[in-house]
Image (tube, rainbow, N blue to C red; front, side, top):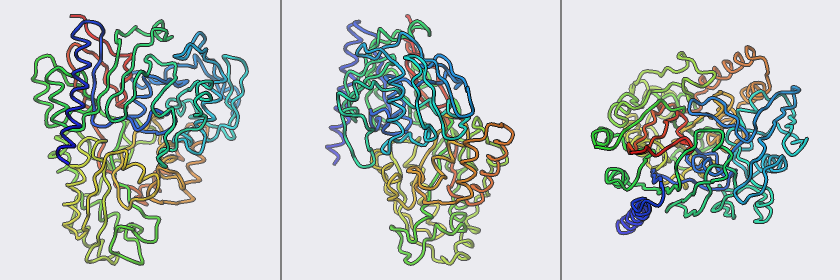
Length: 529
């Protein structure tokens, strides 16, 4: 096993060195960047996961995007308006072509939205109210909805537009079924309209993209000067930072917190940080009659809110913040962060760390001797994810809950959640719409793939549906407050903290840090020396 790990790291480093050689020869401006974990797929509708979206957004584009301040930004749609409570009209940007030179038209929009609505798409909840994409002309489309959908524009920021002809040619009219292990042509190839063209896709080894000289955005935004992007996933923290310090990579998305001072003090390097629109939390299987990984038969401890409360109060979040996160996190009492509509400071308060109270709650719930359970944790997705889980295992042991930790790469971890094959798991959630409805739709609503808890509350489902349809802002915000009151009382998830983004890069490269942790490299530039 050690030899296998060393070989993988060596291969990753050799890839980076190869990219470095091209730059050294002065042929191109090559952006070499790294992070812990690769995109899960290159199918534009396969996985709604931030690192995957980060890769996709270089090649594909949505109708609407966000700028560095997360303000809505016209992309393939030049403008939009609500022409009827059930009809959104989008005027499409003219003169745009796909990477193969095919003109972009409303037909590609209709095809992509229908594809993203398919059963295997991970983006279906974002656009499930769309009943028809009416092609008014090549550059005007109307999205008809079954009910008023005030956030439809916000929801479209991660729905990428794919070329219909290319998809049909390669038999990828349907999105990849990632949870089932499906593989299709779009997983390793791409055909978008974006600033970079996918040249090579080797999952978990490297991804290479080249500049799209015909990108429409070169005439709209400040032109970037990146000729080629080489992405290398380097899971080992020490190896990843060694590559940055030695000059083999220019940009690291997730520098280890323990190395930040060293990076900041190194010549030619700098560190940027900002609060992230992402909260880390634990999910607990409260929907099944029994926990598969527990020694308790005939009942499910997590189905009792007192047990969930016991877990909550047994986690010393201040210790995690200071010792594991080195101060770069904000303890959370709710799984949304301040920029998101519906957030309040009152919601974002935690009960006091109190192991004695936790033990009393377990006894009251009928588990005086605790119980056994497995905690599923990613080891290459969130900042210090495995270390947080290890600390949690020790904390819960003190109240009698014997936790077995199963830490795996995210490609193995997330299908467990989607397929409801986990009793206790870590998850993080960003909110691209900047609205609470997104969280309720994906995480709390019954029968959603991302709801790995089995939580099923018809009252909250009904409120979520009302929130999705309400056009009056005041009424809508009151509905959101009611929904959060139910969600927090039921304690469906155990909040941990709001993450802080830290990026590290060479001084010769400039990239604005954004709070959604999704760099769009057309905003980056190599600095003239």
